[in-house]
Length: 285
View 1 (cartoon, rainbow, N blue to C red):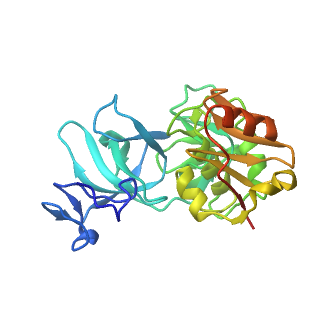
View 2: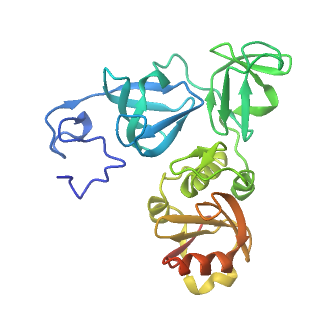
C-alpha cells in the first residue's frame, strides 16, 4: 500500500525498489543509489508502466538529466527527472551517460538538427523548445553540438538566456495538438504549457496543475475575475489556464484538442457546465 505522505509522481519508491535517499522513510525490498543519465532523444516519453502502450505521464526533453534506479532487459529505465522530480519509465535507448554539461538551449518553438552544415540534408532530429544542447563551436549559420549535429544558430541561446513574457511563449503554442503528458509543440497538455512557458523565462514550475496551484504565486480572490491580469493562472480540478488579459485566456485543453485562446468568462461557464468550477486564481510576481 502506498504511503500517503509521499506523492508517487515525485517519489522513486516501489514495494520492491526505492531510491537510497528514501531509506528509513519508505518501505521497500531494496534501496539503490541510482545512476545519472542524460536524455538523447529530442522528446522522450515518461510512462507509468514499462511498455509502449502505458499511460504517458510526462515527457523528458533532450539534455535533461535522469537518475535511473532500474534498467530492464526489455529496454526500459525507471528513474526520476532532475528537472521537476517526476518519476516514471523511459525507453533505455533514449538515455546515455553524460559527457559534458549542456551550454545552450533551444529557443525556437522547435528546430531541426542536421548531420552536416547544410539545410538540404535530411534532419537527424527534431528538437523542442527548452531542449538542452552542448555546443562545441559555431560554423557559419550553425551551432555545432557535441554529437556533430548542426542546429540553426538563431534557434539556440546560452542556458542563462531568459524570455520576459511567459504568456507570449504560451501563445506561440497556439494550434498545438492537445496531448496528455505532452511537453512540446508536437503535443502538449495544460500544465505542460504552463511549465514550459515559465521555464523559458527562467521560472521553475512543478509538472502537474495541482502542484502548480500549491506552489506558484499568491492567491487572488475568485470574486476578482473581472480584475485578472496578464499572467494570472486560473485553476480547476485537473486543469490550468493562463490569463492573456482581463477578458481572455490561453490554455491547452481537450475541448479544442489544441492550445487555444477563448474569452475567460465563456471558458469558466463552459467548464462549469461540464461539472468543474473554478477553484483558484494565482498571481505570479
